[in-house]
Image (cartoon, rainbow over all chains, first blue to last red; front, top):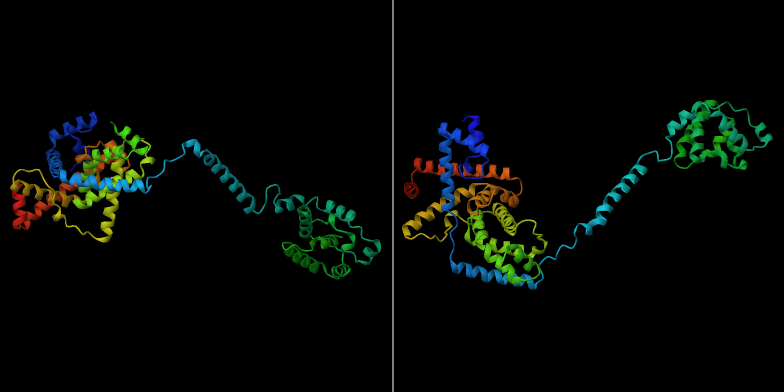
Length: 235
Length: 196
């Protein structure tokens, strides 16, 4: 079978008097004149259609319909009395307006909440790493000033503490970040510094100090006492 | 009185208006169900069930489509459900038991006609339900492809392709049965074919 036959045979059931566009009717007419296979197919399809029409369900007779109507009436009355008829749908489109407006608004709100609470950096707060890197050059001055102003440690106490080595860059970053995040030392009362911890820190080598402060970094997540140590460490 | 007026009255609670609609369409719905399930008793039940469902949900019918199309759609869905359950739980009805009262004059003609019907119904039963539905709606009910697409879903073009495919498949089934008779002749089948 040629491709043209396959294409045109899709329209055969409509030929000659069916719902067929003029273009296809013309093409079919020309094709059927020279293609015996499609002519046979057309005859066969028309035969099947005729067979189907002849074999349609015959009318079962008036008694059948009388009985049908009687049974139907009983069922309808029963359904009517039982109130099975579904109520009229109440709302035209403006009845659903609150839902149409509310649904997108609710979706937007949920999206905003998801973005706000599921991302690590909340809106309005710059990422920690960014803060740390940008603040590196200026880290020394503000922290030192804040610490010196706010922690009015008595001179004799400070003198008792051995001269601390300057903190490493990592330590500076951490302290600055923690201050920017609200854990800074400006709220620290001067008398909060425990003397035994000062002594502990003073007796440490620089490596031990760094390790100790790293541990404190870990504890910060649990709400640690970093504020107390940061000023001491920096001093 | 038009369908729209009858529907409006029925929606307002007039039971007799709905019964008028039932009387108007009962033959078409019954014929459709007969074709689809090949069982007159089941077809009767399905037709009644169709009208009952239409009555129950009549108030949700907004008259955007014709009532005729709507009721055909309900009937087709009922038939699909029936065919699905029959496929699941087995077929209690043998197609040979289908006896429809014909209008033929002589007993001989009636026998031939019944034989022919049985053959066609047996072939129809092999078709997928959607093709059965398309054939029935087109040949028996004379719906256009546009109306068929409204009843069955899809586009008019898809309905036309389905119809063409169904006719071809049916032709092949009927022809293969004839070939089978020619290869393995049995008295009953040979008689049937010779009559054709």
